[in-house]
Amino acid sequence: MTSRFHAIFGPGTKPLIAMAHVPALPGTPLYDEKEGISGLIRRVRQDVAVLVDAGFDAILFCNENDRPYELNAGPESAAVMARVVAECRPEAIPFGVDFLWDPRIALAAAVACEASFIREVTTGVWESDMGLWNTNPAHTLRERRRLHADGLGIFMNITPEFASPIGNRQAPETARSAVISSLADAILVSGPMAGAGPDLSTVQAVREAVPADVPVLLNTGAKRGTIREFLSVADGCIVGSDLKIDGYTWNAVDPARATEFVKIARSL
Image (cartoon, rainbow, N blue to C red; front, side):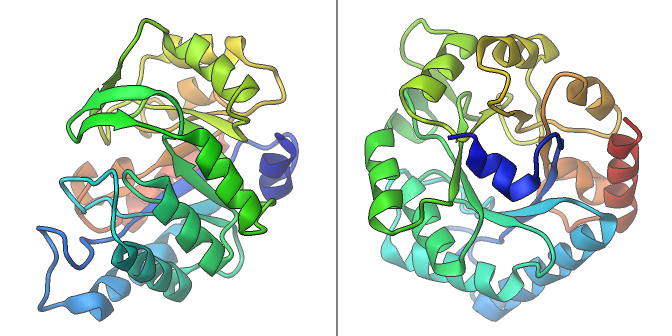
């Protein structure tokens, strides 16, 4: 099952995956109807160009500004997300799709655009800002098979932002179960919200809990000042906020910050 990750990035690599935050989609509270869909595509395309030039290994498209997030989004979300990704996808490096927080939408858009992976919360039950959050990994993996997308990696976030678990299992136990029972292609470890990272000890405990050939990635809170420390434990990272102007999640990507992040991370 881990062969999907290695097929995307190659064995023995620690990929640096950069977030391309999509502005609010139609139908959400923060959607800019004056800019329209063409406007949000223009903004995402600009960010992707900067991130590719900075030297990242992959791009992850995400509807970051669809606040407040939905657990059951509509078909228009899949349609617009697919269009954005199709028009902004990088040509020379892999790319993935994330939809907060509905794996059906991410999977549909990823298949439509021939993405390499998705990032989602697919295991567990959570109390969250969105209410009671119940997942269904069996459905997600069966949909991947039904859509003939067996090569699509499913990277499972086991410590979702804006949520806490119902139950007593800690992150290492959840990660081990996600590998054995839910067939995760990679394990992602997050902090409490976007831009905030987990404790290094949590990442290390998760890394020690799962088989060595299962990748464990830092999912939030990757920063230029701490990325060396996290990559000494993790098998890669996903980064968004630290690459933005002033380090603010909702700003455009800062070329200097993006280039510096890659340079520091590569220095390992």
